[in-house]
Image 1 (spheres, rainbow, N blue to C red):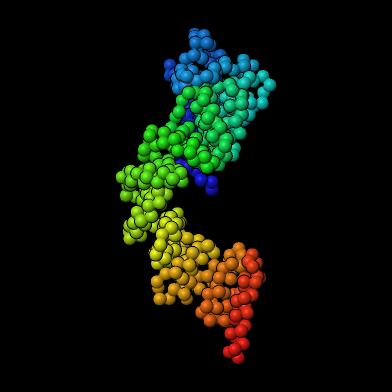
Image 2 (cartoon, rainbow, N blue to C red; image 1 turned 90 degrees about the vertical axis):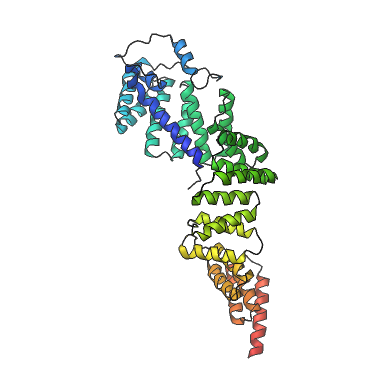
Length: 425
């Protein structure tokens, strides 16, 4: 699954709920509620409703002053076309009554009707978007075209228009379309003259993913300033500091993270990652040691974090052996060629008395499932060193057969084995 940045996903979900409220609040207009415009604009066309007393200009000014009073965009008329008022109201009522299939059919018809104006079509797509999100809010591939269509129509009031824009930026980010996420974020802040935590999170994240680290740092700093408890952003800022050579800032930020990380396993893993990113490897190893002692290495991510930290340190081969072996035994780590190779190397350079034998056992597991003959060749070299001539020759042949290596290197091992085997006859 594509990685969903947790804080961004929560915001996206909230926007969908906002959109739901926007559509379903038409009935509340009768009781004097003044919550969401898109539902009111639909119900205002109902012949049973009272006539709007304020002028359209006054109503538009009132709506535009809600969330984005500095926005450069001037909303268009929020009135639907009279010729489709019945169809539009049928869609709204079906949605209110949670008759989702009927609401979907009516929305499709309203969007396609030649008599619909831009606001009718935008409202219909908005309903379809909410219906889609109710089924699966993670269906970004289907939601993004709907959001793009809504913004292209440019027919909603400012609150809804910019809410859709913010949601589009977030969904682009989740889909790893980082350039589009950045472009929409910039458009949002440029037009609204507003920097929300949510849009800054998207922008900082996108800049970081695009490797534009110098630009990402000040944006991520703003988000951290708005919410210092946002762990994913704090970690990303720590990595950005580390990758731009600002190790003191990375270390300071990691220390602050340690004070707010709490005692749960996930928080401790995040803290270890923070120390690692700040290149404070001993502190990272200390956190991992605490987790190991309390048997809190559980998921694959936990073990991979520990492995990554140990691989950056000297004289941690025995710790690497213990962690990888435990992860494989528990099934948390997959039995891949890479993991077996890491375990073999840790055994080989470790201090255990049976390190060579254990290393060869794990290289023998890694070699058949590796992409090329490199592991077989390495195993052959070790077997020759251990004077296991027949095994050495067989491994070298397998290395040539698997390919992806310099065959002459394998032939050298075969020649050594043949010479030794010839002398023994």
